[in-house]
Length: 237
Image (cartoon, rainbow, N blue to C red; front, top):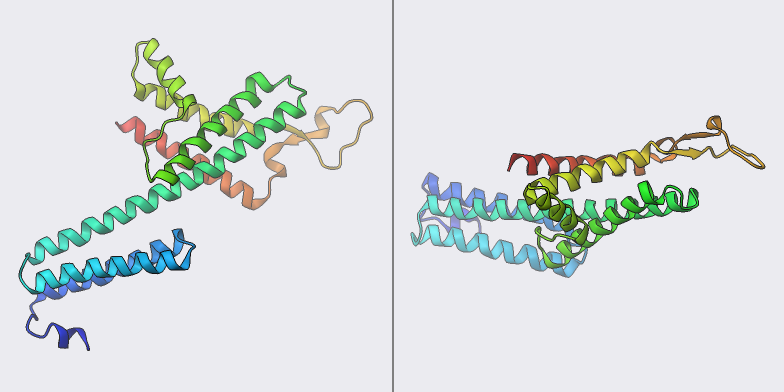
């Protein structure tokens, strides 16, 4: 049965606008589920429940239980909610990837420098990476965006002791996170074809970023850009 046959008694423009908005919501939801739900059964269940919701809104408008304006508002709010959840999942997934990369890089710096650079570079990277893994993994698992790890809380506590607020602590944490990651990209590492029996010289080394593959470099850039965006959003508060 076509939509016009099903809703033949309600042909006004406002109703069909709601109907079109419901179709767009369902289409958007299918895209979101395809990106974030790998399990086929969960994806089908999500799409089915969203379609039922959109259909209920359309039916309520058709039966004049709610106005067309209220129907459009409900559909718009649902779409915005999906956008917010999709953005959170994307951001936290990047946080998990970035955190893992920071931990691995930090361990490499500590090992490669025989512990000499662990206190000033490797250790902080491991701490930030572990904190990012904690915050974003737990956020993904619990569906939250307000998880704060112990390292961030240390920054917040230090900020308060200095007479500032948690906001300044968060800004310091995010700024340090980016600076540590960017600094790790610029650290000198031994060239693949370099060979020395006792000692490597400056010309035997190059910046770590030169040895990164294109995929890894893109991921690192996106992760740092995301952290910078979080810094900007915190700065606006």
